[in-house]
Image (cartoon, rainbow, N blue to C red):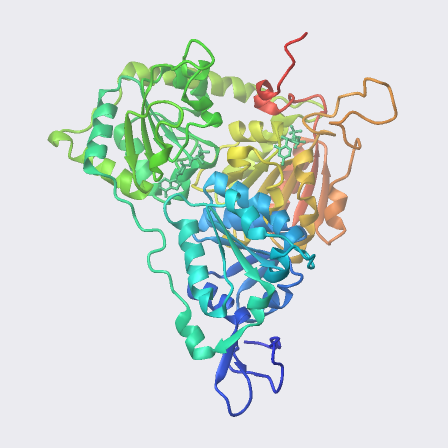
Length: 599
Ligand code: ADP
Ligand code: TPW
């Protein structure tokens, strides 16, 4: 297993056997230890990559894991490693593994764990922890913290392993919890002492579990499928909403067949973009504000009626007041039975995994009384097409402008062309205006190619997602970042360079959070809270580590730099200078800012 000398408590006459186990001495049987049992358990379950940050008590573990053939990707901050693990989980349906040290490292990873749980991404945060006896008596150990208790409310499940012989069960439970049912973040606490424990190698090997069918299919009830199809058939103005659960499910062909066979217009949520190409004639994205209030039956596929869909009610949905129901009837396809009725009545819940549900719906449609499924009324489709065409034409006009300085639109017209020419590239996106404009302007052509701030609108996912996307897929990655958003994970440009990843980071630099125009009302020397150093050169950051830095002030310069980055596959950071007056506070969600009633 390589050249690393495992540490053993007993220490004497230690040699490393051919498979990495420790041979205690010439006469006795082979023994293994906690380090190797964890590594073997992960490998046995097809885990090939660990995202983490070394330190006591896991430094040797990272070395041994690398020696054992696992890919160990080291980060500069655990939150970025955690975000990488989470999005690797989303992309692959295998739990992404994040490894951290105790207390502070654990806490740094915890935001990513909580975000994974919120977004239904399968990941396992494995943290080393300090000595239980001391932690429990609060006697003040090195990095003392009751990590298990702290992780519990933020994780789908949380486990601790105290004995080497339980490592197999611990890893198996963590894997099942992460990927079965609604996926989520799992915490696994491994105390320092566990790693050094030894046991008979044969017994150790036998104690490991290869998880069989970790995410079992969940077949929907026939009755539920029938109810949903009847409701759908009765619709005059039907709409399908595809969410990131649909993207996660990897049932791409069936989802496309469902949309196309029914002829129903669809709206992709941001990470479901590309499930069908955004240029698809049934896409209603460009008529979103028309279809939501006008639809009479809405089928949600792997999308929650949370704030991103205005909770299924209010003016967005044609309701009279801010909390009024718009009169829509909902079908909800989801693996979590508790999701139905969480905001408005769900008339036809279809509970199961999306692959099974969509194929059952398709089967029902195909056998629809021997006749073919009637397409939605032509007036509905025509009304949508009309709005769509108008909005697309309006947008084309805006995109064709070439203002000085460059604004979000003229820069994104370039990004749109580059993504169109490179449909396999993965687009990572965060910021406020940089997020909202990119989502609406840049078309996606393939599933799971758009990774963004998700359910929380969290800043800081950028470089973690970009690293994982490149590592997992081998495809080029384009990260479109607001300058504020980039700052949360910016130090990971060193990681991009260290692993020589084909990532092109584009920082939309408008000198601040949202915009760079605020002024300090007191006239004092401090700038306003939203303002950064003006004219910052983010491109210089990546040059410090041997990457390619480009300063771009025009769409032509941006285009040239992006094309070169994709062609060369070299880690690249483009400082794209954007008009500091462009955009709005909080992008499209300005209205969520509380404002005092008093004028
Ligand atoms: P979006 O933000 O794109 O609207 P959400 O994160 O709100 O999407 O919703 C995703 C939904 O998908 C969750 O309710 C989750 O339970 C569901 N989900 C995730 N994976 C699957 C799956 N394999 N099968 C069925 N439902 C799933
Ligand atoms: C963890 C609040 C939302 S968007 C944003 C912040 C700080 C940055 C907006 O500026 P940026 O984009 O990136 O320059 P742009 O295009 O508008 O100029 N902390 C966390 N998450 C969130 N969402 C915030 C703060 C926020």
